[in-house]
Image 1 (cartoon, rainbow, N blue to C red):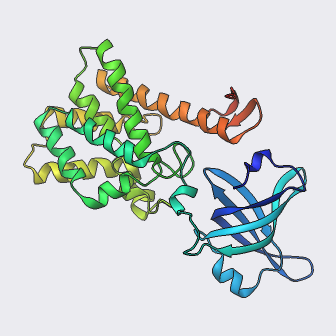
Image 2 (cartoon, rainbow, N blue to C red):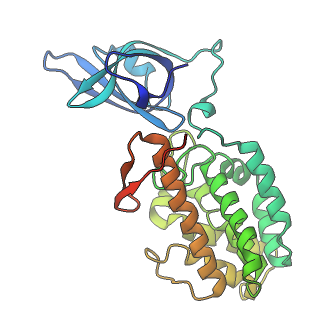
Image 3 (tube, helix red, strand yellow):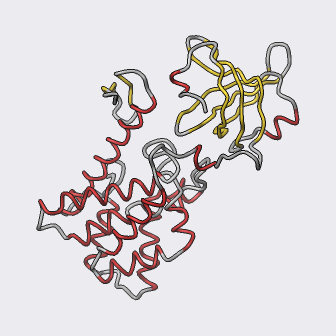
Length: 311
């Protein structure tokens, strides 16, 4: 298997499997067509170019296809990309899974799902427990929660990133709740578990995620509230139930800079900062994995951030 693209030099040869994250067909000055690819493996994005692409290749090598390439690392305007010499589709004899290419190294979907199931059991409030049970008893929700990224690019933007985000925010709550005994533990845990449930309807595909029409029009926060309201009605839980209202308030105020609802309870304030801590530190961890530099510009922070490289 190849070394990281970040560690290659001009003239090096790369031979490996990638997911085609994006593709653009262009026409050269001589009239022939070529393809610009964005290839992906373990969150590393590799720009690549295939000259003189044929009609058959245009049909084969589309977005979301898994390919094996052999190419030469080339510098163009001081930026590295791969000039593809040979390319083919993944076949049945290749010991490669697409989920391995779009996953972050060290993330175990199975272990995270087991942890989330245990976290659900710790919610003792009858109405909140029933809402969680009814939502996660739906196969489609379970499958999407365990596969989708948490976002397209903003945070945890990789296979099972949504599951990792939910589990880690909940784990952080476990660590800090003993310091704040006046908080309603059930509301905090239920919020951690359900705060992004709407993303199963907002995002369409774990391989090359795009926003659905409902995701674009309403956003995942509104979709989360709608899903909670629906199962609460089915269970005969009053819309005025204090804990359910408190849960929905925490969810609605999770990103109050862009929402109309600001945190107005201790639980909402507590959860807001847990979520932001997880998102921001994840952003720095991902920057460290994708860069060889000590200082990197972060669109999230809108400034250069110091990246401490691990030995």
